[in-house]
Amino acid sequence: MNRLKLRKEKRAKVCVVATLILPMLLISIGSTVYANMVMSTQLTAITSITSGDPVIEMTGWEIISHNTIDVNGNGVVVGDELKIESITDGAGEVVALDVTVDPAFPNWHLELATDIHNMVDSTPVWLSPQIYYLDSEGNQAPTDEDGLLILFSMRYSDSWYTSEGEPIQDITTYDVYPSQTVTHLESLTFEGQLEGQSFGFLVEVTATYPNGG
Amino acid sequence: MKNPKILVTLLIPILFISMGAYSYAHFTDTLVKKYRLHVNCFTVEIKSYKAVSRYDDDLITKYPPDDVLKAMGGTTTISLSTNQAFPGWYVWVGLLIQNQGGYTAQVNAPIYDINDPAGIGVHTEEYCYGPFTHGEFVAADQTVWGGIRWKDLEESGPPPGGSPPPMVLEPYGKAYQNKMVMWIYIQLLDLNGPPEDFKITLEITIDVTLAESVYGVAQDTNEEIGSDWVGDQPP
Image (cartoon, rainbow over all chains, first blue to last red; front, side, top):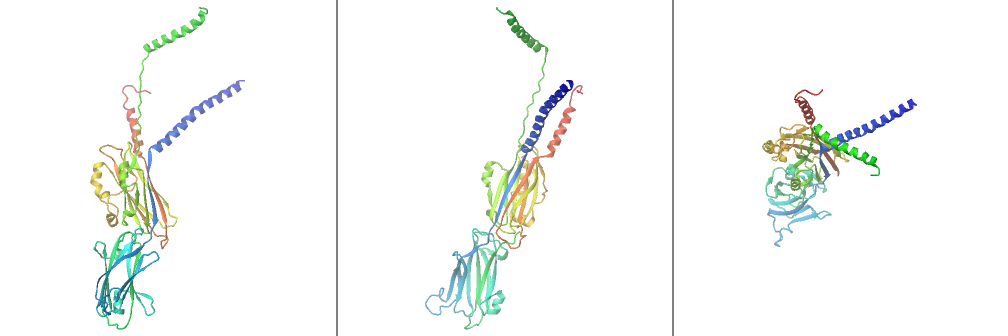
């Protein structure tokens, strides 16, 4: 009987101890968790970066000067002896100018300004002009100012300006931002005697991602 | 009275209780210790932020905008986004962090959670400046915060005098307003060759916790109170 009584008493004591200690443990754990939650904070910066594509177009051109002759005497030179046509892509954006001169003659010259616009949704870009000549089979082959002079006696030079008219020293490392327009001024002077011959060359301007920082 | 015993049974305890209470009031004394606990706020917030890039920070959408953040008085979350990025693109994210609470806070190193399925690669660096009191910050503003332009960062790198995290900010005080500047540099790499369309999300988390010194001070204080006992100390 006594053993049974002692066991019962022990059980009761264990229950009382558990009843007291468990809430105490929970309270202390809860306090620690609460303190850690309240006594700390997180500063967060969420950054979302999506790629863009370089998209440029020609938005205008202007003949600054020329000495093309009105050979047929119809009073029209630009659009007749000197033709400049815009070539558009499927989206209606001007992607090229086709300049035709007939006749060219020694010391014929043309100064042409072209506006190149970086589209609003584009990335910042660097522009790199490249001259190509058309070989006898009509294929494009790269060349430069010296090459044009040797091949066709065509003296070619160009310069770049901001929309405010400030000269750009090196367009190949100049950041053209979206919505920004730059002007490409080209000067052509024919110094040759290539009578009765036709020749062609083109200047391609490529927009690339800036070579980051 | 039909049953005087019941009456007596009721009256005697009543008498005893009232007499006892009267005696207790005269023969006892009371000391009261009142505790008033005021729990200070733990508030560390971004007071202002910048996204500075050679690639025109106007191309980066920020939230909250400057005017909204000023009206809010501070925030713990900011977001930046652009859809005109490319390999090599970079941005310097500047955070002006201020302890506006009543505890000494420790601003820990940023943790970067980068989601870059295209495998472009992201390079990050961080630089801390401060801690500054209000007066110190006014003096340092031009070199570490207000005067910073992308050209300075590109040509000269981060402002001089930076130190790696963590940084401890003392509690807010009218004359102190302890703050710090953290500049985080994020640059996209080009680990996969020719770029394709990509989308990267980058979550920067800066944990701010109670400074370790807070616990240290509390321990010292207890020891001082113990030695301040007047008369015989209790066992």
